[in-house]
Length: 212
Image (cartoon, rainbow, N blue to C red; front, side):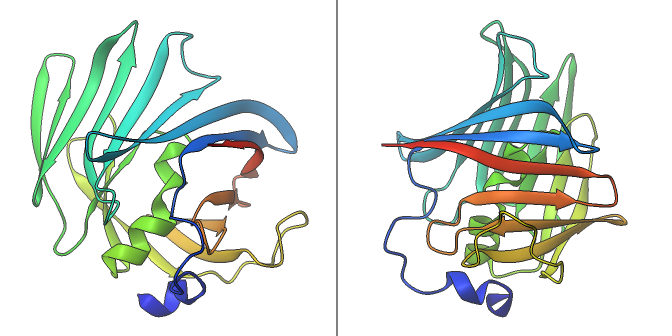
């Protein structure tokens, strides 16, 4: 797996996933259809990734708490009006998913850390960092609303570099079932700059950044 992220293995000048606010635009069929604002902070020993996307309700947001050393998922929570709607907590190779009135125990795939997918940008935001530290090509993807983990498989990025993506950006491809997405990211900070799903004509592009 180290070879897949070779561009990101050198000692970075800046810590991976620096604290700050990252703004993305979601493009579908050539048109901007949504936006996402991601805020990264360090709090109580966790790296916290909060997201509010324009398709969400005004008072809704998600929060991921990651191990700041390995970027492994410790917990996920989707809140609306200040109340949790969905929560997921991990304990080794088992995750506990609570939604509505149900609680589900989910087992990780062998040697594959958990990643939570909720259809928004933050699902992919930390993946370059997660994959670099996990040194594995397979992650256990938990789709919010589903009761089991499925494989997300990483491979060397083979897509042509899109216009507007910096020549210094590294890339990696991830496959979920038969869908391939290419992540373009800064090899020093491991921050996601663009995610391309050309078969679906969907693109996530970072457009503005405020860094502390």
